[in-house]
Image (cartoon, helix red, strand yellow):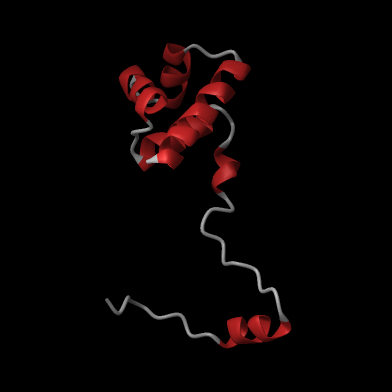
Length: 92
């Protein structure tokens, strides 16, 4: 997946700019060095380990806007959004 590679590349750049070797960041974050290497080379990582590594780089706040509701562009969309019922489960 293209997004995985982009995230891995950005993460590696941030790690290098922070001056961390893989082993140092892995220990700091409580993640195995092999998990960090796999992430940086293939983009594969568990969410739990991604959050731990992000915390290790002091970048956990980057996740705060993930999955935020989209902003309304018109008054009608704003009104419809405030009246919209959020279901407790999916239909399909």
